[in-house]
Length: 441
Ligand code: 5AD
Image: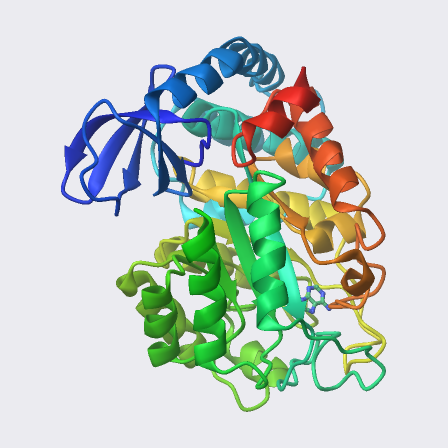
């Protein structure tokens, strides 16, 4: 669980510790030596980031206490479940009621039935049940990860991607390793981010040594959970990056349909992608994975299988967003899915993995629909990402056209997210207290 308000250690069993937050207990992996029961720590994404001196922790907790309960109450009032009536069908009411009140695993045929809903009132009822489950099992905590897109060069030719080798018109940029370390450390110490994703195309200009130096350069200066997201770096590369201090991998499998995968990723195979993900998990990485929704030729069965595949990979976080056609790619003439397809996917992911999943609102969904964050967070999702890429470069990270937040300053993005979370009663528990406190009260 990703509270980054300080928690108190209440149990230690080898690398696994139990942390208490205002009476709620969470489990996390600890690598800090000599940690003892009663100590205070910051944890993020199920991982202990840093120990906090008791005096400092108690001061922060005193600031948080009132606000924390206030937010919880607001979330509670927005997350009730009422059995759908009116134009909604009997099967839907029965299923949703069982899901909202019971704990049994939901059969695949019911999950597919949810993905096939078309009526807006039915989809609203599905969202409500998924949001209720999020609240019931995971409370009001919302992860905020920062993502630094440090290079848009890419050697791959993925059929949908605007920074792939297909797009001859892209303005390419790459940051120097020292610039990446500098920008990441600033995000941590100036803006209070605790979890960072370092993303790039598959850019051969950075060797594994370079990437390792970036990761260790950040970890030596600042405590943070670092996710790497630089495509397929090889199993040896993954191992070396873990040793350098990376603890998360953001890598979508894009589609779990092997035929579609191979059509869209020339020279690559789904098996190799999944091998990377599984090996990374075994090494100890936290995984963020998922896929694209609305690819030409993709069916709703495929989307369901992708949700189940994400679950079977034991992902820490689900990342599903719409395919948006880019004019510089072979799929230029294809169409995006509707926002409702994305909402249904987020809700079904929540229902399929009710207790544990973090589910992120992707920037692609925000590009497709203006109110994507609010709708997604009200449909079972509990995570957002903020782009830390320098303003002058961000607009060139053109995975798809007109990417949301391309022209917003980091300060604006942070305050916008915090306002929304406050409105929804969610605790922005991955960003430092100084901002959370000053913006939310
Ligand atoms: N539409 C939506 N998402 C895209 N991505 C790449 N191209 C597109 C597109 N046209 C996503 C991929 C990749 C992530 C970095 O960006 O899923 O994993």
